[in-house]
Image (cartoon, rainbow over all chains, first blue to last red; front, side, top):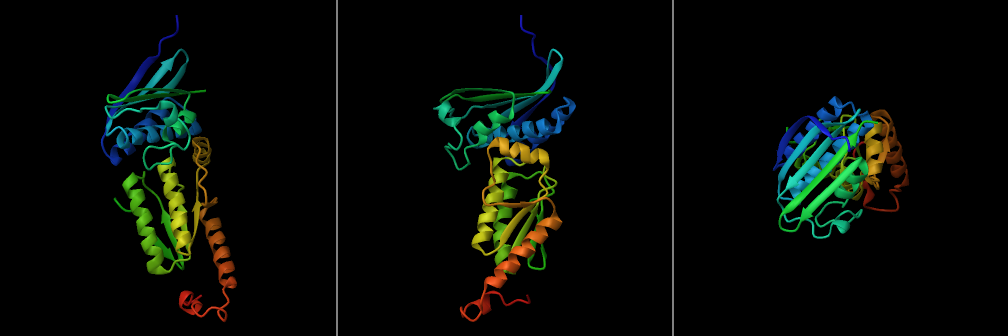
Length: 139
Length: 140
């Protein structure tokens, strides 16, 4: 049986404004510190969280982020889950392509965030919304 | 605070970003810098990002856009003070900061701007183009 992931602590943040995106970044930074991620891994996680929180705001029409310190056996990490009830992503493969954007961005948000983390999952339904979950583990 | 202050030192504009930048503040900075370059006839823009803990695609795009705007307005932009962890993350994210010149710290950035504005001033030959007197008159 696989070892279950234990949630040690967590916070939920609503995302409806620019200021909320900054708050999600700060929450991710605080939890990355307490999970003892290295400086580079903290920076990668916070940057990924910033991209995904902005996606939730701009493309999902707002939503919420859950940021948690998690443990799997001896390893700790930070998990961030972004949920919106927006239009969903019609073509996920396309949305994960570098440089492709449906909006005015650079098209690096989703594909770039994926490269910065250890685990990356998207579930999306057109008309229902999108959930993106990422985890960065200590080394 | 909803504006990033822009300081004028000689013919250089110095911007030191000390807050966790909200997107609309980053956009306001682009516009303010454009206005200020024209208003002060600045030849260089120095942006200190040593306090920034992350540069994501939005802030990265802001830096590229500022560099392009200033180039069109005849000013050079140098971004200084990027933290190593930020540089590593930026590259992995896929951002190359195209067209943005960088230096390790403010001193080197100032030297870079001084050198490039000097070169450009040497290239100007007042007797060939009548308009040049009105362009580069102020005390240099």
